[in-house]
Image (cartoon, rainbow, N blue to C red; front, side, top):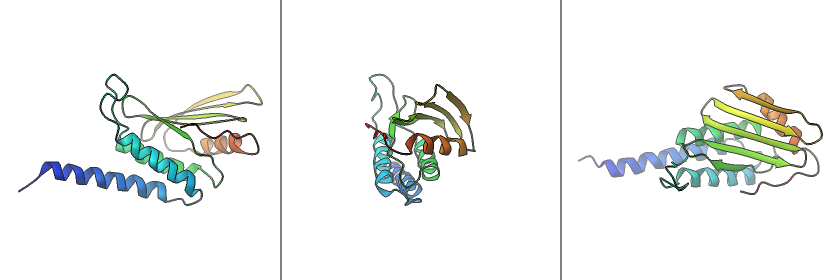
Length: 154
Protein backbone atom coordinates (compact mmCIF):
# COMPACT_ATOMS: atom_id res chain seq x y z
CA UNK A 1 0.00 0.00 0.00
CA UNK A 2 1.25 3.49 -0.86
CA UNK A 3 1.76 5.87 2.06
CA UNK A 4 1.84 9.42 0.71
CA UNK A 5 2.81 10.93 4.08
CA UNK A 6 5.87 8.72 4.37
CA UNK A 7 6.72 9.29 0.73
CA UNK A 8 6.56 13.07 1.25
CA UNK A 9 8.90 12.81 4.25
CA UNK A 10 11.39 10.81 2.21
CA UNK A 11 11.26 13.37 -0.57
CA UNK A 12 11.90 16.26 1.85
CA UNK A 13 14.79 14.30 3.37
CA UNK A 14 16.26 13.61 -0.06
CA UNK A 15 15.95 17.29 -0.96
CA UNK A 16 17.64 18.31 2.30
CA UNK A 17 20.46 15.90 1.52
CA UNK A 18 20.81 17.43 -1.96
CA UNK A 19 21.28 20.88 -0.41
CA UNK A 20 23.81 19.42 2.03
CA UNK A 21 25.77 17.79 -0.82
CA UNK A 22 25.68 20.97 -2.90
CA UNK A 23 27.18 23.14 -0.19
CA UNK A 24 29.66 20.39 0.76
CA UNK A 25 31.22 20.39 -2.70
CA UNK A 26 33.66 23.13 -1.71
CA UNK A 27 35.69 22.55 1.41
CA UNK A 28 37.59 25.83 1.07
CA UNK A 29 35.87 27.41 4.08
CA UNK A 30 34.21 24.65 6.05
CA UNK A 31 33.07 26.79 9.01
CA UNK A 32 31.31 29.25 6.71
CA UNK A 33 29.80 26.41 4.68
CA UNK A 34 28.55 24.69 7.84
CA UNK A 35 26.84 27.91 8.95
CA UNK A 36 25.29 28.41 5.50
CA UNK A 37 24.11 24.80 5.38
CA UNK A 38 22.44 25.14 8.79
CA UNK A 39 20.78 28.43 7.87
CA UNK A 40 19.43 27.09 4.57
CA UNK A 41 18.06 24.01 6.32
CA UNK A 42 16.28 26.20 8.88
CA UNK A 43 14.81 28.44 6.17
CA UNK A 44 13.49 25.36 4.36
CA UNK A 45 11.52 24.48 7.52
CA UNK A 46 9.75 27.82 8.04
CA UNK A 47 6.06 27.38 8.79
CA UNK A 48 3.41 28.88 6.53
CA UNK A 49 2.78 32.44 7.67
CA UNK A 50 6.19 32.79 9.37
CA UNK A 51 6.18 36.50 8.51
CA UNK A 52 2.78 37.17 10.11
CA UNK A 53 1.10 37.09 6.72
CA UNK A 54 1.32 34.35 4.07
CA UNK A 55 5.06 33.81 3.98
CA UNK A 56 6.27 30.43 2.79
CA UNK A 57 9.52 28.59 3.44
CA UNK A 58 12.50 29.10 1.15
CA UNK A 59 11.99 26.74 -1.77
CA UNK A 60 14.18 23.70 -2.21
CA UNK A 61 15.21 24.96 -5.63
CA UNK A 62 16.33 28.33 -4.28
CA UNK A 63 18.19 26.78 -1.34
CA UNK A 64 19.97 24.33 -3.63
CA UNK A 65 20.84 27.07 -6.11
CA UNK A 66 22.12 29.33 -3.31
CA UNK A 67 24.32 26.51 -2.03
CA UNK A 68 25.74 25.91 -5.51
CA UNK A 69 26.30 29.62 -6.10
CA UNK A 70 28.10 30.12 -2.78
CA UNK A 71 30.30 27.09 -3.34
CA UNK A 72 31.41 28.73 -6.60
CA UNK A 73 31.96 32.36 -5.58
CA UNK A 74 33.28 32.05 -2.01
CA UNK A 75 36.96 31.73 -1.23
CA UNK A 76 38.77 30.31 1.79
CA UNK A 77 38.53 33.58 3.73
CA UNK A 78 35.01 34.64 2.77
CA UNK A 79 33.02 35.61 5.87
CA UNK A 80 29.66 33.98 6.50
CA UNK A 81 26.90 35.91 4.76
CA UNK A 82 23.56 36.86 6.26
CA UNK A 83 20.83 34.80 4.60
CA UNK A 84 17.35 36.28 4.81
CA UNK A 85 14.14 34.61 3.62
CA UNK A 86 11.65 36.29 1.34
CA UNK A 87 7.92 35.84 1.72
CA UNK A 88 7.44 33.88 -1.51
CA UNK A 89 10.20 31.25 -1.20
CA UNK A 90 12.95 33.55 -2.40
CA UNK A 91 16.00 34.57 -0.38
CA UNK A 92 18.61 37.24 -0.02
CA UNK A 93 22.31 36.68 0.68
CA UNK A 94 24.20 39.66 2.12
CA UNK A 95 27.68 40.72 3.15
CA UNK A 96 28.19 44.07 4.88
CA UNK A 97 31.81 45.05 5.48
CA UNK A 98 33.85 48.19 6.02
CA UNK A 99 34.74 48.01 2.31
CA UNK A 100 31.18 47.82 1.04
CA UNK A 101 27.93 45.90 0.81
CA UNK A 102 26.95 43.07 -1.50
CA UNK A 103 23.40 41.73 -1.73
CA UNK A 104 22.15 38.86 -3.88
CA UNK A 105 18.41 38.39 -4.24
CA UNK A 106 17.68 34.89 -5.49
CA UNK A 107 14.23 35.12 -7.00
CA UNK A 108 14.53 31.62 -8.47
CA UNK A 109 17.42 29.59 -9.90
CA UNK A 110 19.20 31.55 -12.60
CA UNK A 111 17.24 34.70 -11.76
CA UNK A 112 19.41 36.73 -9.39
CA UNK A 113 19.52 40.45 -8.70
CA UNK A 114 22.94 41.58 -7.47
CA UNK A 115 23.67 44.92 -5.83
CA UNK A 116 27.02 46.23 -4.64
CA UNK A 117 28.00 49.46 -2.95
CA UNK A 118 31.66 50.27 -2.30
CA UNK A 119 32.55 52.32 0.78
CA UNK A 120 35.65 54.05 -0.63
CA UNK A 121 33.84 55.52 -3.63
CA UNK A 122 30.23 56.27 -4.32
CA UNK A 123 29.79 53.80 -7.14
CA UNK A 124 26.84 51.49 -6.75
CA UNK A 125 26.14 48.78 -9.29
CA UNK A 126 23.16 46.56 -9.86
CA UNK A 127 22.91 43.59 -12.22
CA UNK A 128 20.36 40.98 -13.18
CA UNK A 129 22.20 37.69 -13.57
CA UNK A 130 21.33 34.31 -14.97
CA UNK A 131 24.42 32.14 -15.48
CA UNK A 132 27.64 34.14 -15.25
CA UNK A 133 28.40 35.12 -11.65
CA UNK A 134 32.06 36.03 -12.18
CA UNK A 135 31.36 39.72 -11.53
CA UNK A 136 29.75 38.82 -8.19
CA UNK A 137 32.85 36.81 -7.24
CA UNK A 138 35.02 39.86 -8.02
CA UNK A 139 32.77 42.15 -5.99
CA UNK A 140 32.79 39.70 -3.08
CA UNK A 141 36.57 39.56 -3.08
CA UNK A 142 36.78 43.37 -3.22
CA UNK A 143 34.53 43.95 -0.21
CA UNK A 144 35.94 41.13 1.92
CA UNK A 145 39.66 41.76 1.40
CA UNK A 146 41.80 43.15 4.17
CA UNK A 147 40.97 44.58 7.55
CA UNK A 148 37.60 45.92 8.51
CA UNK A 149 35.45 42.99 7.49
CA UNK A 150 32.35 42.96 9.65
CA UNK A 151 30.89 39.48 10.28
CA UNK A 152 27.27 38.98 9.24
CA UNK A 153 24.66 39.22 11.98
CA UNK A 154 22.35 36.39 11.05
